[in-house]
Length: 381
Ligand SMILES: *Cc1c(COP(=O)(O)O)cnc(C)c1O
Image (cartoon, rainbow, N blue to C red; front, side, top):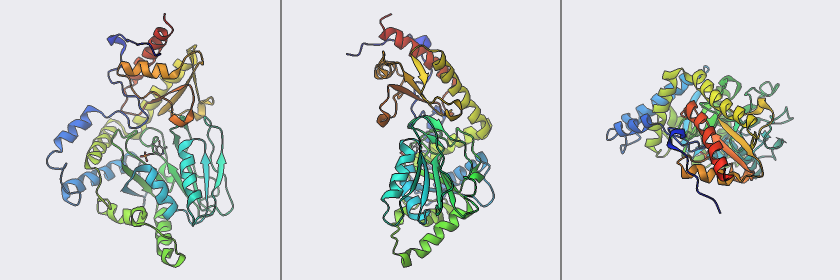
């Protein structure tokens, strides 16, 4: 039986959304949405008003990520999960090597394993809460891993596997929860893809991929050879189709226009404040608040033990077994502080906190106070 928790109003954060995706949407984004009605919302995505929003997102992301020469920004529907299937269909020629240290990295590897036209992937895995990059592998034509493993709160540094580019292989990084909050040098990747409902504080359903000339060439070759090889590339999963539409500031099929408007406003906000450098420092500050609080706490410890693997966008905190993390999560929710639960399949007595750029560092400080107060109420003090 969970007891009721009542937190005093003066310790609460201003905004109680700490989810790891969907994540907090700022009020200014909602204002942008209201402003976009009726000229953009509810109008054709093939006409100038919506295409201008797409163009603005492209320009904004190019700025934010200091887009290297020749790289392009491509969009499609279905989110990062759809992009795994697109990568299997259009980027992996035969064999991919994966770094797997959590649920999301594992899902992409599972898609590659299930694809009948690909060889079994080569998996470099490690325990959840650590990180593992793929190593140079004979015959691998793609190297892939998540920048930030959202299921565990472990993050990697993005650099190509030494020797992989020389061997003609592509580097494909899942930036879904990292993009916008963790440092990245895009030139170390060929495909950096993400969904907008994490650091970009928008709604889900869209995928965005930043692609190198080598990646564009690879997809064109696989699609050109498809007829002869018998490899079936469904149009919905065709990267070439997505690229051709994106070059015209469109998507192959109808996108959620509200998502585009929300994302455009967020990118604008990030760039106005100082871009990637500003947002990574802001997230790092929020994360440091949580990690140092946990290290000093007598009931909480950072799940990721090696500080260099600790994510500064998704922070996971183990809770002492004398307490049920689920009771803390429920007590916080009763007071408007939501989505602090651990990744469902991780099955740990844990809290997980999304500290994306939209989250105020002061609210993260307030969250630690609220967790402490919830715990003392649960302990009946
Ligand atoms: C959330 C997430 C995904 C899945 O994104 P969808 O938009 O739900 O498909 C994939 N990879 C990572 C690292 C994520 O955090």
